[in-house]
Image 1 (cartoon, rainbow, N blue to C red):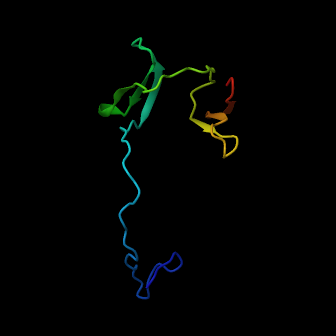
Image 2: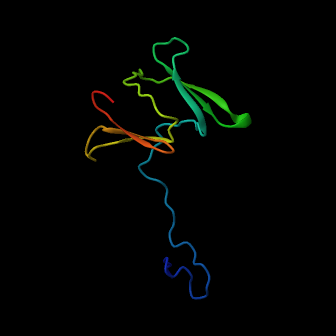
Length: 124
């Protein structure tokens, strides 16, 4: 007997057993692992230590499990633009103009009462 969303029960009214056997994953390899930084309560990019590249300082976790994480990027960070914001954003996304474009064209910054759309080009 088979089951569908229309008739999930068999004739006796019981839920039928599993109709398939899960198989092991194929074509997947572990490439990298990252520590979980959730919840990240605050984050700053600063060069406190005077190194060539600024570091990312993140406050992670809550209560006795809270921690300060210092992330040092493997590549140099270059500040391309500075735009004052009207408050703390709720979300930040990048969006392509066309799906086939190689690079994103816009930065969307979401606030509680407003949304900013910034164009990416020679200037932001």
